[in-house]
Length: 280
Image 1: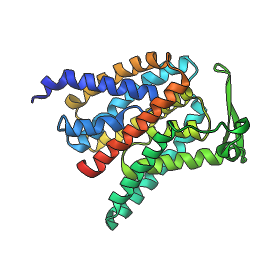
Image 2: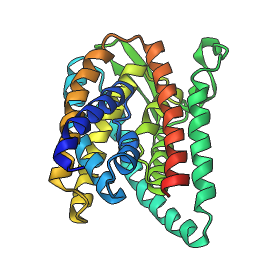
Image 3: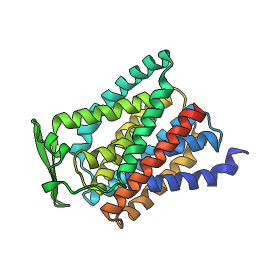
Image 4: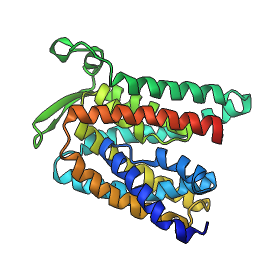
């Protein structure tokens, strides 16, 4: 089918994925790439470039709108994003090593299982930690540490520099190793490790996607992976979805948003199984 006939469908699917991705802080690229490959017959490199450039306007829109509500923690975002970029480089080297060894499929499946487990954990009942002083709370007391305060939302949380560097590095290494993007790891990390409220975590993750998507777009463009005629309908859908996602996000309770994040992780795990095992 000619691309012109598919434009309305591409816009609609981009809109729906971005709407959901903007709510949970994942952006939507991890869901869009397999759909472009399997449904619309995009080559994998063109699909990745299309998703990456589509995330640029949608993440900027989301960040602008969420900033007005005080939901974007720029300090936390930059603190996690710097080691993430280092981790991406590290992950790419690890990828090359295991690809030569022929053991990559085992790592891919284990990674998908890990994401699935994290997603399921959002639905498992857990005992309330006494005075909220659990394992990660204690680790975040390791110096150098600081307390980030959000006066508009009247919340504060403690962050250890070592913890931020470590988990940022891990998220980046996983992104570089498996080529699935690190954005969908940031929201659960902020929720589980740093006890950041769900709406702030999701909005901050979208801010970090601004940095990674701009960087990724430059890299994909240099390699010829971005074709305007294939990318613009998805980019338009993503932009409209970001606006709708923001409006819907403001109406959701944090507890319900956490459940949606769990669903997203479980879905992402199955998408990864599909990508790793079927698409390759």
